[in-house]
Amino acid sequence: MKGSLAPFTGRQGRRDRAERADWGTLDRDLDRMSLLEAGAMHQARPLLGAGLALAFIVLAVLVAASLGGTGPGGIAIITAAALGAYMALNIGANDVANNMGPAVGAGALPMAGAIALAALFESAGALIAGHDVIETVSRGILRSGQVASTGSFPLAMIAALMGSALWVNLATWLRAPVSTTQAVIGGVLGAGAAAVGLGGVQWPTVGVIASGWVLSPLAGALAAAAILGLLRWRVLYVPDKIAAARRWVPVLLGLMAGSFTAYLLQKAPPWFLDVEIPRLTTGLAGLVVGLVAWAAAIPTIRRQSRGLENRRAALKPLFRLPLICAAALLSFAHGANDVANAVAPLAALVEMQRAGGLDATTVPLPFWVTLIGAAGISMGLILFGPRLIRLVGREITRLNPPRAFCIALAAAVIVLLASSLGLPVSTTHVTIGGVFGVGFYREGVTRLRARRAERAQGAAAKGDSGPRAFPAEERRRRRLVRRSHFLTIIAAWLITLPAAALLAALAFQVLRLLAPLG
View 1 (cartoon, rainbow, N blue to C red):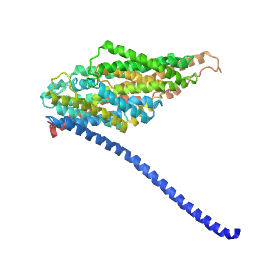
View 2 (cartoon, rainbow, N blue to C red):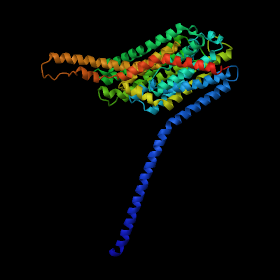
View 3 (cartoon, rainbow, N blue to C red):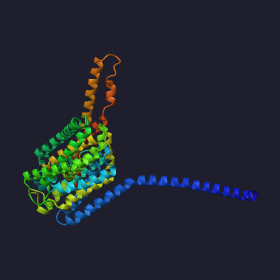
View 4 (cartoon, rainbow, N blue to C red):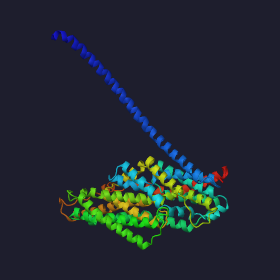
């Protein structure tokens, strides 16, 4: 029996081995095809993003054509809507990285969650509270009547959008987080100067805005460093760190909730809240909401802190919720402040068409204009934002949840204050200033410890096991802020306004030669 089965078993075994060899070859071929397919999809991803961006611009053109492009100057409005949508996409790709970079760099949010949160609050900020800054940018920089008297106002606004958007697009491609506020104001200045000369610029307003650009990064750095110093003093370097965190983290959450409520009630547009509320009432409402948020956060933080060790590293989970709230608040503030960078020239053209001139004291802003800016910022963030989010969050200085919370909270407070005053500060300047402020503060503390260690070593006997001081060369190598990124970002800030102004002036001259838009 065994002898009769042996030939069959041998032939079956050879057949099985041959089939396995064939299947192995097929598997390897399928693996190669899968690898090629993945590579092709990776190469086609930028084309997909560009295609979706182009579809959004076309949609903005259709909206403008149906709602604002039917009367005199309709072609200019449609063109400005396309360029405004393009500028909004660039703002989302470049500027919003500053809002979510700290949260992603600290590990509090994954990239997808950060993008979804930012898109939601950016849109809410732009739609609810973006009208004041839009008015400043659209009417406060140029002497609109003087520009309009030459018949060049539509071309100037279109050239301003074109020059600023091209510059921000180039900066995004170079991975430089430039200020879109500087870009659009530089574009308006360049186009206006090309149209009527430097006399058409309202220099006092420009001077106030420019002083904000200088002071805002310093304010962001000082505020973030001060909040970090407070946390180190009251929470991170105390004997009972868990008890300190239970006491102070709810206070910080209450402060954020109260200040945001007061701001929202004070600056909401008529379509959102058609009632004028006295400042005392908004302050009391903010106080009540802050107290409620503080009381509600106490059991949450207490529950999260159970079982945690009494050391600094164990406190990171307790700062995750405050950091997410601060990042959301900063995104709202950014949407309220920076939507003007995309649609303020478009708003001015729409106002000119509706009012028959530029003599009105305010811009009667249609909802669809702000919607184009809000949707474009969110779309640009989703399609092109992750690269700069990684740069801001991970490549300038090392962040953890407490440090990232200090940056986001400081930036949100400063930008909300500027938005309430109608002042178009640069969210980029404030947030990057906060990142550098935290990094330089930690460098200063490290340097102070090193000096103390050197003094202790000098006073101690040889072979003492006291604190060890690193040599000067080693301390330079261990710097906590990367100087290359610092210098690159500062250089990008300095060149943004003149570059955008030059591009806008050139665009104006080209447009005037080709065909004035009526």
